[in-house]
Amino acid sequence: KALLEILELEVPARISKVFLVVDEFHMLSESHKTELFDWLLQHQHRLHVLLIANRKDSRDDELLDLLRKQHGEKTEPEGVNRVLLVQTRLGKAQVQTVMEKNNTEHKEEVLLWMHCCRSLF
Image (cartoon, rainbow, N blue to C red; front, side, top):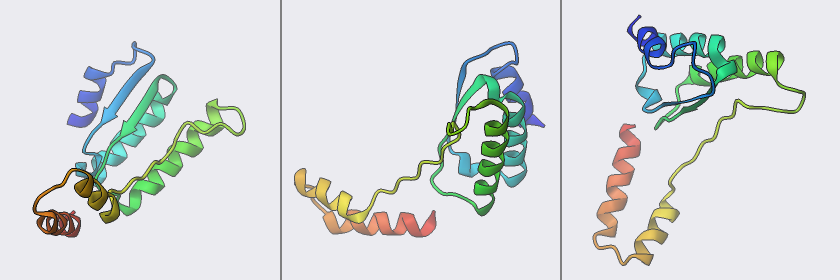
């Protein structure tokens, strides 16, 4: 219930054209994600939302698909999609290119750190 209270307090219904950033989205529990998406379905007409996450859970795609379907059917002309999923990944080749360009010391340690982080998260 605390999540909904925060949303209602910070993004009250009387305000339109809001850009809401949900950082660390992956840290939300499954129930909080469901709560958030239920709330977004009710308020999507007045919001632009950016979800930022380091990883994606299996149910995240389902929630996005539901939001996309509900939003598209209600408000957007055919062919317009305002609910998008953009995924990026900082790859080893990119890291190596930047390290070479900047003459980074301890390149192997940086790559090991990157590998360990990916394994954990």
